[in-house]
Length: 438
Ligand SMILES: NC(=O)c1ccc[n+]([C@@H]2O[C@H](COP(=O)([O-])OP(=O)(O)OC[C@H]3O[C@@H](n4cnc5c(N)ncnc54)[C@H](OP(=O)(O)O)[C@@H]3O)[C@@H](O)[C@H]2O)c1
Image (tube, rainbow, N blue to C red; front, side):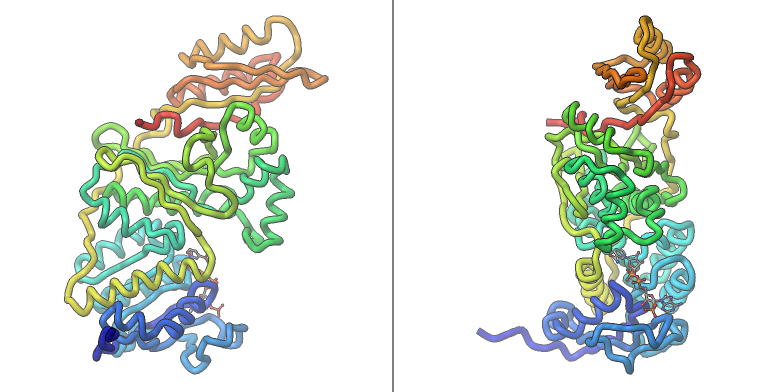
């Protein structure tokens, strides 16, 4: 058996950033150089590696001689063919990507923050105008081949909904709260000790990271330009172990979901919030820091993609796949398919329908239940089931509702908050995934 001939072409790759992902990518480019050359059609030479601090510690495999702090000069180097942006954030990543695209160089990036920013729309437009690739498989759900699956394999599919567990930190926290009965602060501390949560976990636990990914998914799956800031976003910080216990008692598992859903003919609902997911739903079994994205299409039915959503090496694997695509496309004088985008017409959250669980702390006295139930009725919300537990000082009521408009639920909560025997309106969690089509 003869092996495939080594290609004659060599392309020069600028790597911007040498942190978790950048250093792992450099390792893959070195250790798999021959295989990547055969797969992509060209030897991939690292032209330079831009970093912030030349003296920062790096893994041994990173060639010191290629490091530079002048990312702008590296991107402007006329001998560079492809740019890989792994710095993160908006600045200087955004201007660097713009310069590369403007010069007709393909860009591979893992930068969800940039892509979900208003600049992300402009950069995609620029790439299309210049006829070059801007590829970002690693920006959503790390190693999971999601963007390519949606853009290519499912391109003919009319997608109804994409729902994902796209943040490993929060999934780890919610898994521990559900399985060990632990409370949020102690599990967050454990996640930080394990390196699964940042010292400042805001972007993860408030849902902002998932919102950026939801915005990107809205573009890839539905062709709508949506900015991360326009995504309704509710994090997990208000949840406690009692919510996980409520979920378990009623046959659900708590998950933080990014949901992108066709709503009517021309509207999209894009939102991130904690959700009660039925234990029978495939997303309910996605534990710890794993990610998964559940896709519902009209013809294809249900699909789920599962894997590692973060980590240097898994993310670098997705970047490598994009780099091979960009190389092949450059050699062939073509680009990856980029369907036209429209500005997103977002359905107002108040119009979205969900079932809910609502927890209330109330006085333990006659007539309270009837008063509370009447408030739900006033707002056209029908109660599916209810559980009452004495707490010593009063009673805890947990209601499960049928599907209702979000605006009606908000009205209910406002009125309940003003009801004299209601001591506290506790958690209100949307129930998601009960409407699967067989
Ligand atoms: N880590 C993950 O699991 C993961 C998963 C999915 C997507 N991503 C995305 O991948 C990208 C990289 O993430 P990461 O975790 O590798 O980040 P990171 O570890 O913080 O690395 C960032 C790198 O950028 C360099 N850098 C910072 N400012 C710079 C500047 N002005 N000029 C040149 N270089 C500069 C840093 O240099 P120094 O090393 O000198 O400080 C560092 O090497 C981000 O967009 C992130 O959202 C990451």
